[in-house]
Image 1 (cartoon, rainbow, N blue to C red):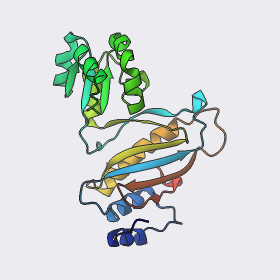
Image 2: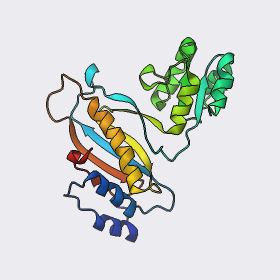
Image 3: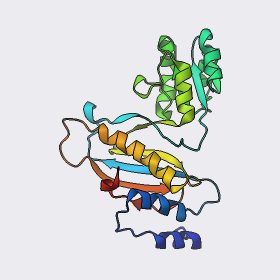
Image 4: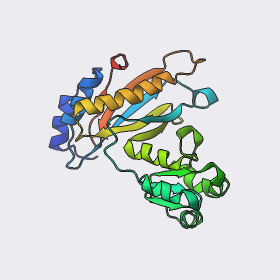
Length: 230
């Protein structure tokens, strides 16, 4: 059985496990109970009442966080030669096609997001079994299959994130780092949660947002009152 550190005991003591905190209060508290020496990620865990096996309830989408994520994402653009300059000028870390498909087939996946043009998806499909399990497969629903590769790169670099409900009906998403002010964390969380609320399926019956919590890396979870969402 692992031993709980003194710092973690102090952090645990600050969190009332039976209380539902207002969103703003939760964001201030998550900063206060952070025990890491590095700039930890602040993550929301949203338990929805949906059944992901039903097509209209498999919630997924994108949102642009107003204050960014605090992390620079490595972006690969799979495109035709005439779009490579547009991609790199927009901030893409890598741009090309055949050479990167070959690298990925050989095991290279040192990237966070892949954007692809529609007319190269036939080639991208050949590496779908590699990209899919890693969450890297380009998809029109997340804006990563588009002819406007430059615009897509800029959006991701500014803080656009994708999210999707897992097989348990839970969405896990980062809304910043502990170095962010509590206000910036709250604004990012509000943007994400507001987007998810708007995506409630018209046919859904019951409690849509069953529970909500926030935690930083290695910190205790803090329960949030869904009614406190703007």
